[in-house]
Amino acid sequence: MDIKKLHETFTEIYGEDSEATFFSPGRINLIGEHIDYNGGYVFPCALDFGTYGLVKVRNDNKINFASTNFDLRVKSDLDKPMKNDVIDDWANYPKGVIKIMLDKGYKVKGMDILISGNIPNGAGLSSSASLEVLTGVIINNLFNDNSIGMIDIVKMSQKAENDFVGVNCGIMDQFAIGMGKKAKAILLNCQTLEYSYAAVNLLNYEIVIMNTNKRRALAESKYNERRSECEKALEVIKKVKDVKDICQLKPEEFDKLEYLFTDEKIKNRAKHSVYENARVIKAFNCLNNGDLIEFGRLLVESHNSLKNLYEVTGKELDAIVEEALFSDSCIGARMTGAGFGGCAIAIVEKDKVNLFTSRVKREYTKRIGYEPTFYSTGIGEGVHRVE
Ligand code: GLA
Image (cartoon, rainbow, N blue to C red):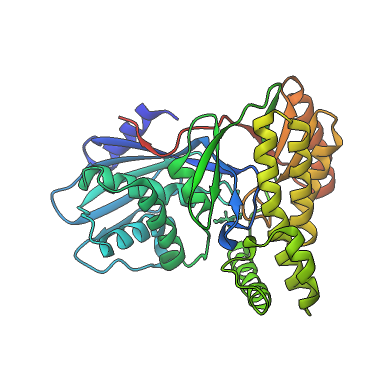
């Protein structure tokens, strides 16, 4: 990112330069998909690309939003109620966080903001959560003396997405973005929010992000649908077992309860959740023990479960993962994030990456009719002030 250019743009828009710059990453999830809202373990990491925010505090109560990614500028006013407005489009994410923080009694003042991101939009790499956590950290740093803990910022960002934007997401994305550490993945227990870090040492392999370039149309409504299906599954389980979340069950326990389900689809949603949760712990151990082949195999198992039991992949993600696995240089691949399009990850031998991507590109394009995009990324730091 050309920060100097961003300062120039800021000055062009607002008449003088900004006083503080912040960075908030995107994220990928290594494994543990669609189980954060079922009290499961997830294993995400922050990326080294993301969203920059330049800010200048104002002397009044106006908040102005501009972005280098979209033409739309939005003006809002702290003296008026913060409401979600469709025409405010992307600015509803920061507005939501401001609203939640005001409701909690935190200080927010007027400011001019310029946002600039290099996370491809709608690719499932959490550009929206990145913007939310960025907003929380700006407010914490500039108006609240850094007195708000990062996990509280994470929770308020999730609440903004749930209550203000209307997507019933779990906590994984905001947590990964807030708490990410360079070269580390976070093992997070979404029921207790206990977490630990694991070094992502992939030896002679690297992570390749593969964007299907299929926009995640209707993803929000299908996402909310999966959540309510899981609530139904939990009701069924609760008839015989006193659990708070589906992921409290071990696979053996779940197998004994399968007979309870009259609806095959609801059973499959629960089955994915329970088995995926068990896979996360196995994958965490594999990574710690340097057993990358088994780690890769678990990623493939995860993808297949998301395809067959949870039904959130779709032909584009399935095609790109199949094509990735066709190459001997790839030891594992799966969709990452909410699914229904967006990105998959592949673990690929470092010195064969170019060969790998050109083959996947060719074959995917033949099958789907348009090209995918690839990013090789490092695992980056969580959100922070840059200067
Ligand atoms: C989206 C949500 C997360 C999580 C994933 C699926 O990214 O925001 O909370 O549920 O989907 O694992």
